[in-house]
Image (cartoon, rainbow, N blue to C red; front, side, top):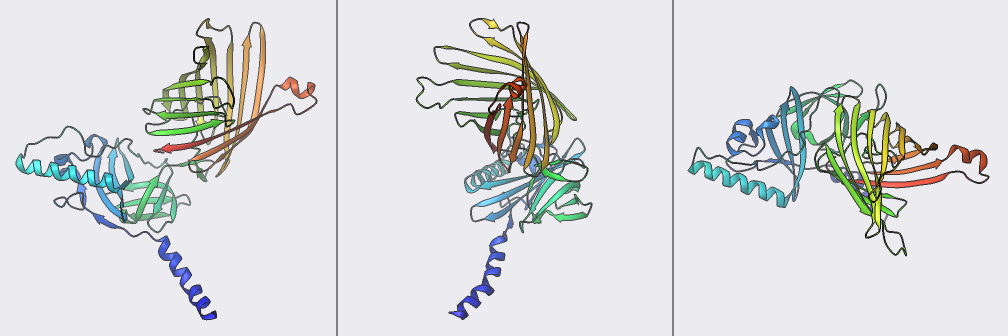
Length: 390
């Protein structure tokens, strides 16, 4: 018995090491294509859009039925690298299309193709100011920026200033999911940047991104980015034992995106079928970044039966990420109408993971703090799960 324990103690580290390694091998997209698809072959076969600045692509098998596609290019003077995981069904589709196009070119050397085999939905632009995570095949993760890029290697500068040359075959995936929080530290970026607690920011979801959110458990919402400038969300309440449920929809368009400034406008409409509804149109301006910034907004409520209400709401909010998984948020509203005003203030936290966030805050009216003998705060609870491209 003791001997078996000794054997396991010796073998376990080796088993863990082997389990932690990824095995990979490079494969061509087609037997007639080199293992590195260059711009000349791509121009003939139209596998990727040349307008993205495509330069080269490699395909690595990383599992029994999974592959990693690495695409590099340069657009507007900036190198970019896109890594995409592909399952067997998609892999077979791509290879069949490439084979069919190669056959057609052999039959007609002037053949042209109207659409690419693989659509690059969003070019991953990298520059000296864009921090990224590079996960290597051995599962280690590097944080830093890209100095230069070629089909075979990447020149990488770590957050500590060390310069490394990384071979393409050592790279598993690249993610731009980081934000510079202070002068030198990079933290995971908040995946839920389109709102504070409830109030909107000037940011929108990018094309292919999506959120499933839930407020107080009872109000689930799904939002998707249809383009980089336009997103739409909506849902229906799940209030127990209610005779009818509240439906809501919230389109949002980004009007301006520049260094440190995002401006958006949108609408929130809520209603019960056959009983009417109400909503608000708004605009929001966010300065700084999701790691630390200020949001100013204004909203005008409306009623479909009576038109615009004689009321306006003004938003002042702030957010500051203080660690890898924690952000501080304050959302404050001033409601003005009929010669009266009401101030609603809040403060709280957002807990951040790779794709999920949980918000916990407290809202109050300043007058209640002095007048109310009990607990003068209304708790706020929400969570959000991101899906799609990040």
